[in-house]
Amino acid sequence: MEGYVLATGLALSACIAWAIGANDMANSVSIAVGSGVLRLRVAMILFATSLTAGALLQGYMVMKTLGRGVVQDIDLACAISSSAAAFTWITTATLLGLPVSTSHSITAAVVGAGLARQVLRGYGSVNVGVLSTIVLSWVTSPLSAMVLAALVYAVAGRYLVGVVARRGTAAKVLVVALTAFSAYSFGANDVANATGVYVATTSKYFGIPDAETMRYLALFSSAMIALGGLVLGRRVVVTLAYRITRLDIPSAIAAGFANAFTVWVFTTVPYLLIGYGLPISTTYAAAGSIMGVAVARSRSFSSIRTRSVATILLSWVATIPIAAGLGAAIYYLLAPTLGGTG
Image 1: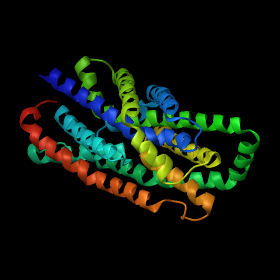
Image 2: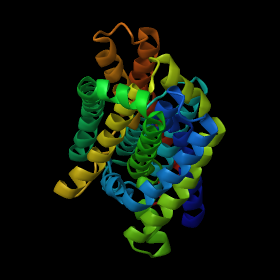
Image 3: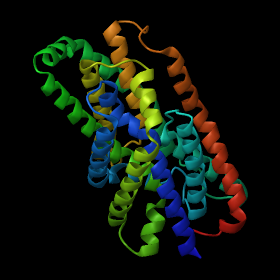
Image 4: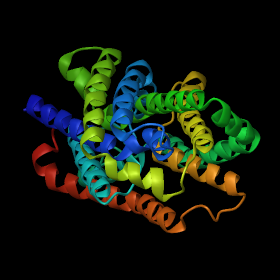
C-alpha cells in the first residue's frame, strides 16, 4: 500500500513541477524576451538547461529547509494533500495569466493540510521557526530586488546605454548571460517547492541517503519544470515581459542582474551561515526588479502599468487563503483512506 501511495505522491510532485515551470519560467526569461534580445523559443531552451544545472548543483540547499517540515512530522497523506492543493491553484492561476508565487502556494497548502491533520489526528503542529523564516523571504525578496535594480540602473544606466550604442552585440550577450544566471538561481531555489515534502519518505522507502535522494528528485523535477514552461509558459511571460513596463536593453541588464543575484543570495548565503537556504519567491524578485528599473528610469512611478501590477498583487494576496483552504479540504477528503499512511 505504501508503495502505491508514494507513487501517487511522486506523480503529484511531477505535476506541481510542471505547474511551476508553466508559471515561473517567466521569472527568468521575461527580461530577455521583453527587451527583444531573445525569441521566446530560444529563451525556453536556455531556461531548461540552466535551471537543471542550478537544481543539481544547489537545489539541496532549499530542499533541506523544506525537508525539515513546515509541519512537524509530515507524512505522505499530508504531502499528497498539499501537493494536490498547490497544483490546483498554480494551474488555475497560470491559465488566467497570473504570476503567483509557487513558494507561497506550496507553503500555504502544507500549513492548511497540517492544521487539518492536527484537528483530525491531534498531532503534527506547525513549525513556527521554519515558517517564520519562509515568510521573511516573502517580504524581503521583492524589496531587495527592486532596490538593487533601481540602484544598478541609476549608477550604471548611462554606461549601459553607451555600451549598447557602441557594442550592441556585447550588451545582448550580457543579457543572455544574466538570463542563464537567473534560470540557474531559479533551479537552485524553486525545485524544492515540488520535491521538498517527499525527500524523507522517498529516502526511507528506497533505503538511500537523503543527499542521493535529493539529486534524483532534482533531476526528475527539472525535467518536469522545463516541460511545463515549454507547454504552458507563454501567457505569464507576456504578463511580465510587456504588461508591467516596456524594457530596453540597458534596463533589461539592470533588472536581470537584480533578479538573478537576489535569488542566488537568498539561496546560498543563508545556507552557508545557518545551514539552510531561504525559499524566496522568485516571482516577487522578478516583478520587483522590473518595477525598480521602471522607477529609476522615469524617476517616478508613472511608467509602471498600475492595473497590471494591481492584478498581480491581488493574485499574490489571494494565494495564501486559497492554497491553505484547498490543502485542508483535500486532507479532510483523503484522511479516511490515507490517514494512516506515513
